[in-house]
Picture 1 (cartoon, rainbow, N blue to C red):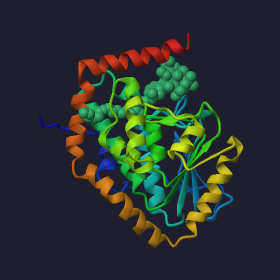
Picture 2 (cartoon, helix red, strand yellow):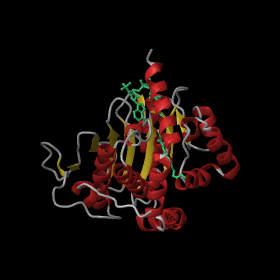
Picture 3 (tube, helix red, strand yellow):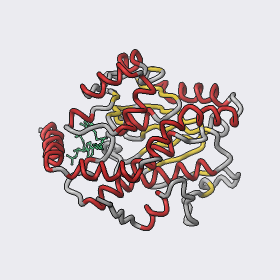
Length: 301
Ligand SMILES: CC/C=C\C/C=C\CCC/C=C/CC(=O)SCCNC(=O)CCNC(=O)[C@H](O)C(C)(C)COP(=O)(O)OP(=O)(O)OC[C@H]1O[C@@H](n2cnc3c(N)ncnc32)[C@H](O)[C@@H]1OP(=O)(O)O
């Protein structure tokens, strides 16, 4: 079945592979700076130059209550990333959360539940695009993971070059899709396998493990676990180490390592969208999502 993807104009402009964001740029000089420092704000994505580290931007996700990756939020993240990528002032980004206790709850279940196929297709294309943009970014991308990070939140973390997790037992991280009755797509799986190895990924994916910090460090899904109040400073120190490497050498090496994984998706993006739409539209999957969403509601009591 050929799928016609009806994209809205802004999303269409953004989601062409490696599209350049058109004129209506969000980039603007930071208020009152007058010094050429740039700040790319948007309602849900706060981006500021790190005052303590030249060439580093801090990107804070602010889509309360749980930073779920809705289509609008994904679009804003993509715009901000594109602007940073194109601004030669910046060589690195620290991605973190502005929502207390939550890095990101992952994909927005309401974008996949009770939606028509065209919407699901548009949504999945945006998910693919965010992954490609973060995973293949020329910038050094450090995740300062200051909250729980399931499923799509974990994918975002795994796509960074380095992950620092706050040491709080509530801040679990992992690809827990099977617990929802859904499947992590092959490219989520590939990134996990690349990070923690085949056997550990096999168990983690099938059992939908959400690793608390000590286990996350042990299995290698994060690189460092530090006290919560040291996440930002640690991310900054790690960034300095990565920025000490000449950009061209680091970027070419990153590309060498990551391109084969990205290419697997790039070679079959449309098929992947069609698979997703077919899968998510099944009655049984919609029922699983319904049950899961009800569980989330009931949890509140
Ligand atoms: C052949 C195959 C082909 C292709 C592959 C196909 C398939 C499918 C692949 C799909 C991949 C999906 C990856 C994902 O990311 S799925 C999302 C997984 N996320 C989760 O499991 C997290 C769920 N949320 C929670 O566990 C908790 O909310 C959390 C621990 C994050 C926070 O808990 P807290 O107690 O602080 O808040 P809550 O009261 O639970 O939540 C507040 C409100 O937010 C809503 N919520 C939470 N998470 C989501 C979400 N991911 N999407 C949408 N909405 C979410 C929650 O329902 C509450 O809403 P209200 O009740 O206030 O309305």
